[in-house]
Amino acid sequence: MHERNCVQFLIFLHMDVSTFETMVTKTEQSRIDQLDQNNIQFGKLYSDHMLVAYYEDGAWKQPQIMPYGNLSLSPATSFIHYGQAIFEGVKAYKDPEGNPAIFRPYENFKRFNRSAHRIGMPDVPEEIFIDGMRELISLDRDWIPTADQTSLYIRPFMMAVDDFIGIKPTTKFMFMIISSPAGPYYADPVSIYVDDRYVRAFPGGVGFTKAAGNYGASMFPMTQVRKMGYDQILWMDGIEHKYVQEIGTMNVFFVLGDTIVTPGLSDTILEGVTRDSVITLLKDNGYNVEERDLSIDEIVDAYHAGNLKEAFGAGTAASIAPIRALTYKGEKLELPPIDSWTISPWIRTELNDIRYGRKEDVHGWLYRF
Ligand SMILES: *Cc1c(COP(=O)(O)O)cnc(C)c1O
Image 1 (cartoon, rainbow, N blue to C red):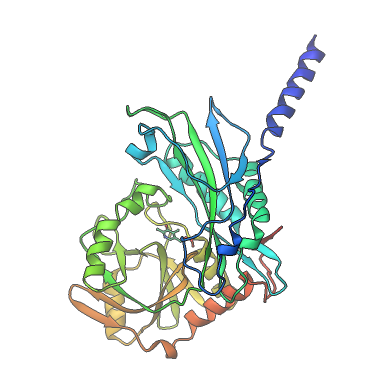
Image 2 (tube, rainbow, N blue to C red):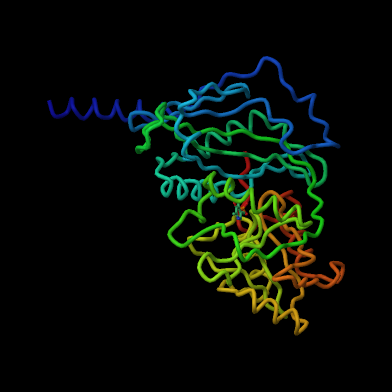
């Protein structure tokens, strides 16, 4: 009797695991001929397939890859009302021989589940997030562009899909992955407004997650700043409005004298994969890097002393975005001419050489498939 129970248990386990095998329905009509390699407009075109997985009754169901298409949802679907939704941003690249690779997807996988935990959503298993992503991008590998500095942007996301407008812990979730070709990002140096009024994140809040609401809440300040002629906001801490945090949706680095300073991690800062890659490469190459509290006053003082040498944002979308000026309380801090910079261009080239397989991947950051 005991033995039989064990066998049944094993069979049950086996069935449970096998449900993560992705069911694939291929498109009958690829749209790949709509992709103009020389004129890629980010977010205009999505690859042929998408991945969808449902969570219900306390368990993930079999993920499915199917032709990219619209969703049909009840107007009472909970995330639409209460914003219980999270996302990730990952990129796939091709090396000079055309072999595809995804850059550090396990970091996004771990961060996604940190976001999921804080927003009250179930963990997504590796078999769905990583294996599903690999299967999807493998199927749509022709959508990874090959022209210089192009990539395929991969967007995993999850939302609460209970068909109920009462506020209560959700029980049904939907995880999806879509992807969109991204053109070369010519990082025009950005002009930054240092915001001492609006705040992106608070201690105890959700700033360290890629929760949808964080981005919704930044739209108004962003629009105001754009109207004033700036490209991005440098957010400061929510309590003293004094310590710098991030720019827009990028982590931020300042070169002060011969030291590179970036705000230390906390629950108000998104732990960027690019940030980590930049810090690792800088340290590998003997640069002084400090992760610590950095006040706007320290930056203004460094500027007046001629020590503010370079500043840049770092994120998957833009890679490295040089900052040409910062405006704080009416004073415009103009950085030295970009062509005199050494560190930001070096780190940008270094990162790209690894991503595009032109340089040895000593840290094992490329996930090949
Ligand atoms: C996504 C994001 C970043 C950058 O993270 P990467 O993993 O490097 O793309 C930084 N700050 C915010 C607020 C973000 O949403």
